[in-house]
Length: 453
Image (cartoon, rainbow, N blue to C red; front, side, top):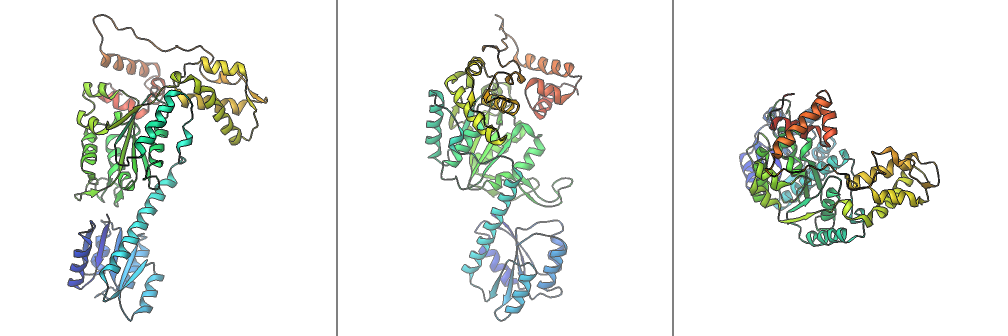
């Protein structure tokens, strides 16, 4: 739950707090002096400090002053004698969050600790959300009236009613896997709790581990203080692993433990942290192929694949194309302060003819660009030409014929990566763009196939 530092010279009181807080799942450290506590806080971190005002040597008020100078933003609850109201007020002015009077009531202590720990958790979650650009999506952000998308709606409703079930969402890039994950979360009873996400292809293995699990002070270079991981922030909510098929095998074993036991350890830590989190994952890769290639754990796949759905590509729900285009037109009208009345019939035909290999995301980007540059009252074909060959009829996919004696998928993938690197003069960013993958995914594949930088 929380790391609590108790500072009191009375051994009996330290023992009482340990007996009270340890069974509640808190990590408790007790010290007899403020001087010891200041040294401790140079290398360790606490979520909450319980501080006796009357201490030998440096007293509690002096400790609070030193804490302010160190800019340690740790909530403090002071412990004071019944008659020392003025001292309590002075402590509050120095930044203390609350106070406990001796002789204290254990139920009162529990209530105060629980309240502050919960407030800290909410503050941590808000700090995370403030760094995110994404808007909280609801069910209405998945647009469509076709039978394939209606099946998706039915799946969301059914899975949302079971708030602990693990979900695996499959589908091509741009089909809306994140939207479905968010809809499942916000339609469930966890909807008023955090929805935390991470793209597994966007981080190297060690960085991804630190982001997910957090780390202890001194766990690695520049780890000057404890940091909570994203999984910890998702307590009571949902955690979304996007592109989990790109996760390194070494980290997959640790995620398997999270799924099986709902526990993990911070990097450099020894304490097991318990969470109550629904795991939702998504992949645009064929995970069965990854298993056969040895890059994905079969036991993890079975844990993830409890409730699974494959999202339909946009080419299989043509009746939704115009509906989506009009929805995006309305949205970008507002964003760009325009008043386009609709879409010309000629453009509608072109939109319906296109194969949309980038799916809904490609359509959304196409409409955004067209609205931005359109100067007439209707959206026309003129500005859609900004996109690559949008007016070309569908079925324009790259097709590789499999010879009778078979072929090696690994060799083809390696060859394509090498060709992209040669074509871009070994510029990894441009090569990744040519292959429609992230730079981190390209680097992972280069390492996998032993392709030199």
